[in-house]
Length: 230
Image 1 (tube, rainbow, N blue to C red):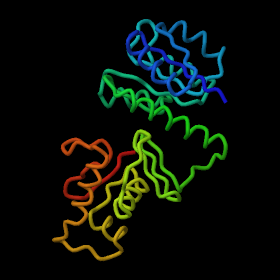
Image 2: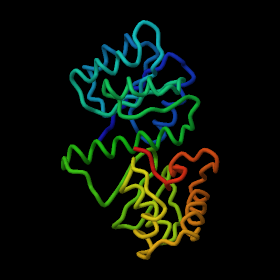
Image 3: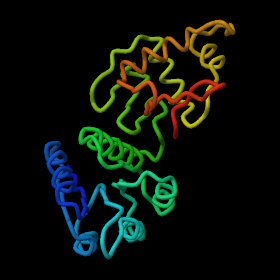
Image 4: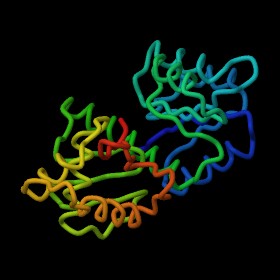
């Protein structure tokens, strides 16, 4: 099945880079530097996903997103040079599915595209989320296969590390206390002087190449425990 992806960015270098990496994955890319031209193409092609720059002349990515949402429900990923929460809230409110902040890692961009496509295809096929697998922002963890990949690269996790990551994904968006995590994974009562969880989280972050001061996936909630943000 051919997958058509709409790419709209008035920065030629960015649009060309996105096109190059997506074509390497055998996606059919329809690239536009002008949002007005993209508007005409929306109804002409059967798109599976759209990547839209936020800041464009005449028609913004937000406006383009709204136009798409009037008729279509395929995933929309916004590309933005801004990091303000209000921009993300605006985009998500009008129907965007994900955000990528410039400058970005092209491999992460591809992973996010794949994640959105997988989620969209699964939803359309069953309308029921597979609770044996979590898939977001390039991280895929499959309980049945006992397999975890990050940006399509498999992570060599121990059973304990896998269980920690699974529990955090299962409770995504919620701050999980160290005590709760220990009892859920080890099945024992937590001791106040036990740093076992902290040690395993550190090793898990190392395997995920997470920067200690600003991890992307496993966040520290000071005085509480850890969480993976929704």
